[in-house]
Length: 425
Length: 101
Image 1 (tube, chains in turn brown, yellow):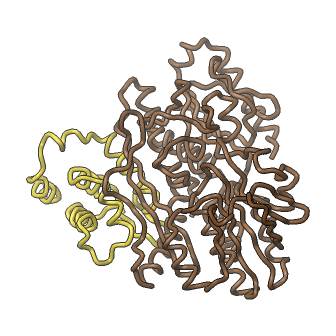
Image 2: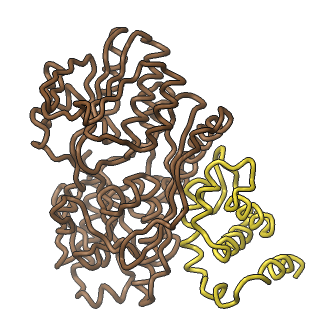
Image 3: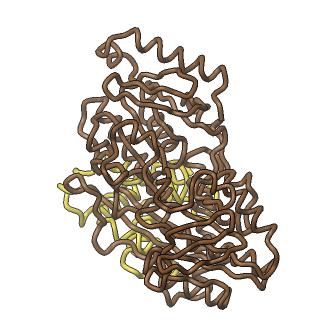
């Protein structure tokens, strides 16, 4: 979405005013923190910076006027959520005193400490927060390019792609097959593909019961695997077929026009709806800022989530190398709070408080059937470490009451974290 | 003063040195992830219970029971609380007890 004229004028006004002052002068006045990306990491950082620093100038740069969340987008695909219920605006952050500019950050100069926005305007910053999410490694999966996504949607960035996939599922005849391709390498939301398979199976069972779900996987194991497989068996019988890497699940080529996925051993899977989740890397602006390494992801200092390569630049969420923390919205939210505290301390000339993080990922296998994984993390020697003996997955032997409670708590989590970030339940 | 009594009683078994390590900025960071499920400042908008304004002693007892696996209603909290030591649990209980419901 393009920036409005008002946004650009505001951005230019801020940029010119700050540029007129020398660096020292800038730092002595109210410092300016620019946050790029209004998702789980960035919007959290903006809100918590505001709470911790009433005098700080905070500008959030986000292209979309409403942010569609990847969490719960699978429930939309399954017909359990309306689209509007998974999108969130920025009125509450504005009311809290965050300047929100709807533009795309095109470039970052970490020497001059500027950000160039779509439309050419420029912002100066004293500290920069990047929460750019993911981008795709185009060219790594043969046949899957930016044109192919209109035929075989990825739906791995929530938005029009998610709505396209939903409309393809709705248009599919009963008895058809939904084929999902799970990528190689680190990807956003490790349990996401398997929750999506569950939600598509729920939709099929209720509307197109002769249809099939086939997961072609680059992995031999996956997140919460025994729990998912137990739930699939209980709710969907043999509707969902998971093909591991070893069983020829690795897809090496896609023919989007024919809706075919070709495996390493040459098996051609013909789909009625083909969902290709492509190989991933940090969002492009992270590369422009020079904070990525040769993996395509961003190394950070775990105590603050400051870039390990560029001082003064903090990076959050899926873009970062934060294992054992997964690439989840919950983790991005937790990292945003730690970074906000670290930036606050840094600007005041204090040591940052000790970092502490947690994660909880709920997945919904069917209505009233939820599972979870949790973890607690600290920083040690600049790395994220999991607290020994903490965390773990839902018990495999738990009964239906437990699964029902975790389905309800999953919805409760979504309401709470959206209130925490966007001020919307 | 009445409100302080349970805090003093519960803190008796705690090493004073460790208690002093937890300054407010550190407790605020420890409390950060709580809001992600229990809502901003522990005020939940949904199905997960609010924790703002919970009596401190009750919150300590519940969190310790979660951690020790003795709360029969626990789902995820037993896994999460294993990541926090007793001093941290007490600090978190105090933090949320001081927030109005």
